[in-house]
Length: 316
Image 1: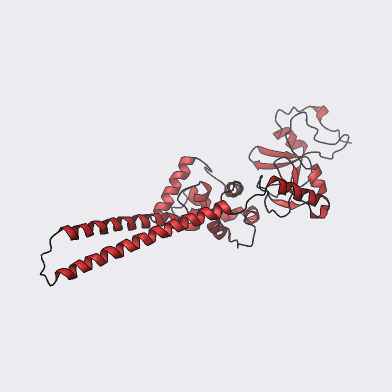
Image 2 (image 1 turned 90 degrees about the horizontal axis):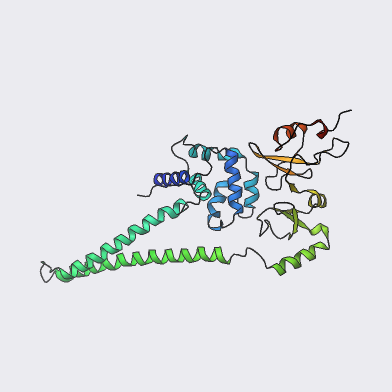
């Protein structure tokens, strides 16, 4: 029987087979949710995601996920680390979404067993009808018509239930297919170019989105960029012109000439993993403030850095 216990056991099995988020922190789980959401194809999962994050249909789900306190994922973390033997249905549905477990959510997982049992019952009813016709009746002539009538009614009732269930499943499949394939998700290149040109005439109406390396001007009608799936924000001329993601090395100029003014800011993604940018701002994806580069950081974290006196600015 497909119970909530078997659902959780199968999810844990696939989680361990995939080898993702092993020994995760709560921040790791939050970051994985953001990345998974930006991958798209989450329309059919939106209902239980909004239930987990407590988001109504008028709110931007991605924005809520990004602002969620990592502490919210404590029970999810405990379950994945097997610190607890069970967890709530909404936690299981979230984990199923993160590792792309099918079928999900639990309601659909449970429905498949119910449907299978209905089909078996329908087949059994068909066998019963055949047996009733082939086997000679031992009752009297007066009772025989009543027995035939009863068996016929049982068979018809079982078949009706079977076909009603099948029709309902087909309807649900077409409904999901229609919502997923015909929901407008992106516009043509001509429409995008036309709207970009229209916004260029008035900077107050411009918006921008992160393309992985810099901010790109985009249509303000989007909440997330249709190609990059990053958040669309109000246009800021300084950020759009100056903020760029860069790679650094020993040859990088970290400070302005003859000053202590930093030219590079950084963000810690995880242990010993950093991203570097060319302006003071917030991280385009995570929304946290970037930190200015320091001599300590350069000495300890910049690849192939050599501790040479000429690389630092002399103090007065």
